[in-house]
Image 1 (cartoon, rainbow, N blue to C red):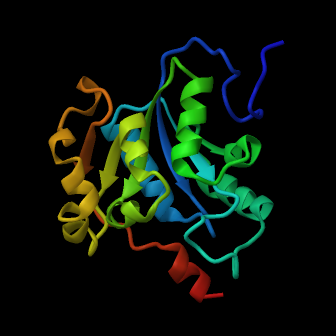
Image 2 (cartoon, one colour):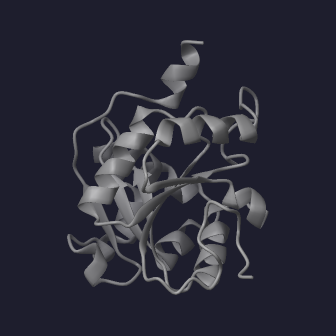
Length: 198
């Protein structure tokens, strides 16, 4: 029987050549903004699936006010409700909360899958604070989604400058490092605003 990293993901050794978008985060809670970005990614990047990587704990965020992982997973599964969006706790299964480490482990376990890391412009702006952030760009393609009012700051920031030569309009024609910026209609939902209402 082929090993799995959980029922939600393909079995290890799966030989299909799929394009997978990876959307990581706390999902505290999951909201329409996550769904909006995922739908746009599926369409614009011609993805086979988007995996929501619900993090056990974001190293840059306080654990205070953080719902349990199981509660966040359940909320994300309810919100996703899309045949091509897979909600997973793969980081818990892999024993990591560091994006660079997660990507390295996924690439090793799924050599036939082509991954693209999906981030909002706000995360691109703060990416130099992440552990081994340059390894992310070197490991997988990156798609940055417009998120006003952060876009200008992000595109003028350290990460965009560091990998300026790797920016492309044809993401799949290039190997990592390669990243693209996707302008789209802004969605007003945010986890911070949703938590403030409760």
